[in-house]
Length: 352
Figure 1 (cartoon, rainbow, N blue to C red):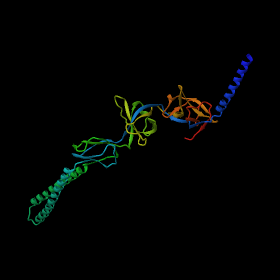
Figure 2: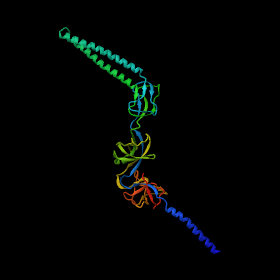
Figure 3: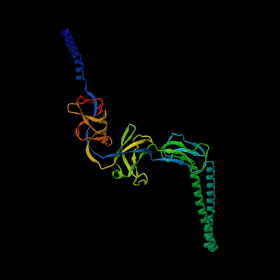
Figure 4: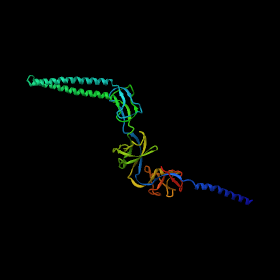
């Protein structure tokens, strides 16, 4: 009986070994993991502070009317206009009347000027033959000069009336999108009344309140990392306004953002330097894996196997993470496909 039990146990052990053998063989024959890699680099990096900014437009204006009258037409919300396009129209009937009146007054004075010129010539001829006094000649010359000044005044009135008539068509001062109607058709508007809000959606900037303490490390033209939602860009500092707020102790920083493709009003996170930059070895932030409370990345060895190296995201500077050891400049590190990698596993590098 005892021999039978031992024999059965031995048989089961053999069967278990036979069944495990294909699994072990299959594990050994697993294809290499497909990964994408980047290169560890020596970079000039500075400790950073994250601040919140907002995408704004360089031109965000409330367009007002320069003449009074009834509003005849107005552009629709969402309509894009080029510079010089008509965005609203004021009823111009009274303005046309004013122009005709000013033009008629000018022509009347110009006709009077013809008479005054002839009068001066006649008295000059009489005075040369002693048939008219010099005082009378001076009087007609003075009358001619007064008419000449009246003509200048009349021309100015015509110019103003023509300008008022032209300004009855309210034109866009810059290209942009009508984002709000501030008046409606049929309303009577006085001079200076707002008609539409026009926003330039092409020329964009990012406005950032930054601590005064970081101002020595901010230089116009230097690039900083900007993140919004899932998009990241490296954008140049256009200017740092050298005036701090007495309450918040902040200065305003402006970044050029016309090519970033963001919508006006988008909140963004900006990483600004807060100390002098130092040179060090770093890997891309995308290479770091967070798993089970650990932070690490994989470098690819010469035999195309993955080696795990410790990292610390708390030291991250923008899109790069400084590393102290375990990797050298030029080493390949995995930036895609590292989540399921195991130390020593073979990898196949794919093109981005």
